[in-house]
Length: 401
Ligand SMILES: [Zn+2]
Image 1: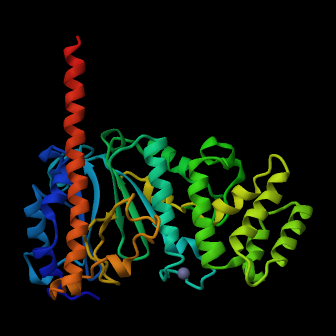
Image 2: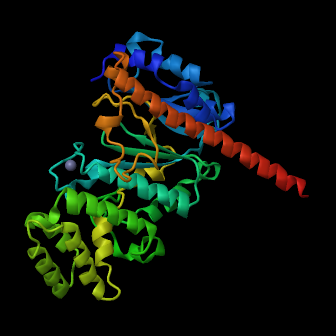
Image 3: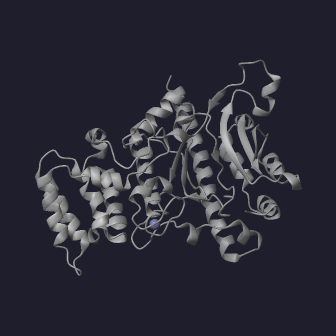
């Protein structure tokens, strides 16, 4: 648990409330006033709060010693400021718009985390599945859907969020959100698993060219599969572990051939070469999806669909504090914070400040915080540039008439 005094000092000294205001107003101060904020303290939850600007938000977070929120969440934009909802006629107060959001949690990968981690625990090996989630989803959002404005955030606990704020995206209906989320979701779903998260991809989804074995998405996934499972968890050297891989091969002849290759793996052999041999064997048979099903089922992002589909779903704000870990929910750079060359990418223990360290003036934590605020500032600045570019294009097209 994080102490009230620490929280208060953090909100006062470190929370970039002006940048949060800049982001959520999207160039229109009135838009910000209609945004719902929700606060949690001692399991008491207060919804439908709204503010005029960033300083009012900060004031709410720090004004009353007995009511300093442990965390705060961001909801959608309504037709009227949520704090005034009771002063309008019934039916007037309705949800209007919100970012499209993604939520990926490490606890949804329990069935394949053969490193021994469970639930909210993670290690340097399985954490990379979160970075794979960032890299793959960011590619889909930008290169397939053409979205520009994405804010990736470490949730402070077990996962990662993304806020997509392009104007066309914010005005999506629940149906539009569902369509984007369903396209991104490759897993089999079942009735008792409402959120749709399950450990095997639905092979019917694999015929789309975006997921074929020569697609960019598959290439990214294969890179993580080799890094995390073949090298990191060494699954080819333990029968309990490779059983999972074999379970995807439903052809008994191919399964036997693959088993033989695994049996031939010696102590000094490079397991990733054996994996390449396995791929060759499986690809001999035309039109099978075994390799795709294995690689994607192990590493493809497992989205919490319910969070993405609902317009009025609340999501923890960037820069609030995770109550269990004390970590700040810091923004990530989707290009620089994923593994590349010698860099292992973002790992909370190395790159995320904790509230206690910040309020005690720990230099290293302060530096980490500054660099994370820089990522956020750049994101807000890009948003402004994008907005003025759009305005310019708009006036250009007006002039042509
Ligand atoms: Zn692990």
